[in-house]
Length: 215
Image (cartoon, rainbow, N blue to C red; front, top):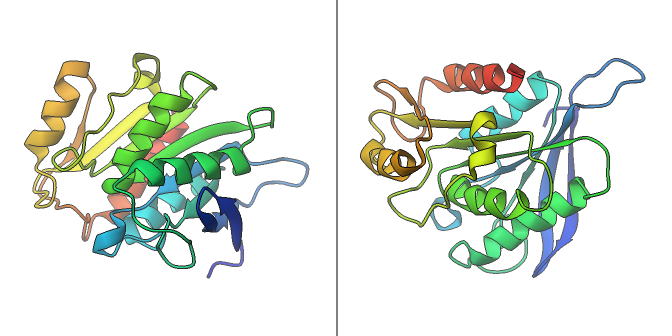
């Protein structure tokens, strides 16, 4: 584990939630730009906070000066509870946000998710957008064919990055486009890439870093 990565647990809705917190190397006297909470793929199909795409998202945020918070949904790793088809997992994500970026605390909030995690993150963004500012939203391999992904609030479109692989064999690109089209929400498509971005993780990290660097 990276020496700038800390493992901890917090109290979630159904017990302990396991977190990994990656902190950027910022100059003395400065603080991270904000906190990015990153959600992992489907718990019943091997999804954990150690997933390679989730790690890539965390590295992109840290590279751009953000503190990155990964966590295991209920029933995964040391996190207590049972899989709840996205309902409880949304509450897990909101609990992590509340703990790591309290509403009256300093710093910006970013949300990111991969696959099932992008589905859960979409609902978190829709709820939190009515309560507090969200500086950046990143959805990768969004599970639009398997779950009812929430529309991205219009005010978040300018700060949202949606990335999908052209050859995604888990979530067909056509399903993501069908979700994005009514919103006129742009989708960045990586040619020839499948769901887990094998061989193209550096490209994914670069795309996310570039998005984070945009005003």
